[in-house]
Image (cartoon, rainbow, N blue to C red; front, side):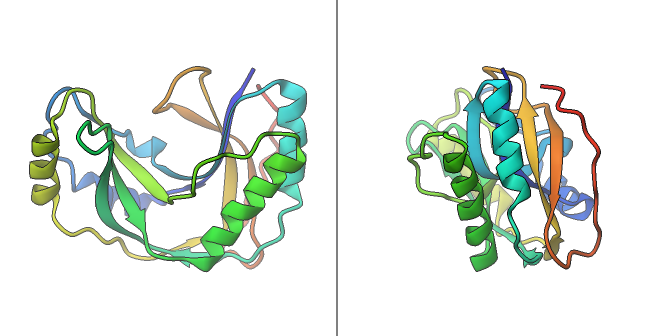
Length: 192
């Protein structure tokens, strides 16, 4: 049973910008591996292979233009019990449209609605035992953050080990957007 989600890969240049942020984290925190940095569009979870195949087929029909995106700002999820540090995304109507299209594909494949409001972000670090004060100190040291813009020319279907979080992730299939700078047609066999 594969654990699936759709997402956008973070290009090498922006991963390098993120790598420059790395400072020691409190309470057993760990930075996300650079190869696992991504922006989730629609989390699906652990599903059976036939439904995974149907979802992938529905994703194939998404027909949207490539667009520019920029990561900007840093925040934390978890409030008084912080669990992750993330990089935000500048407002992007095309990104919102792509996320909605992935959600429609999931629902048309018989998957339940996500139930959470979409908040685009890239998870930079996962935290275990850090206090809110410790994390506030880390955020202060990280300061303002804004990457160079990049072109989103495709989105991908990622898989992860079942019942785990935080990677490693594998690309199961890639879906090109119209007019992107490059095109990747991956002839992948569903190894789920």
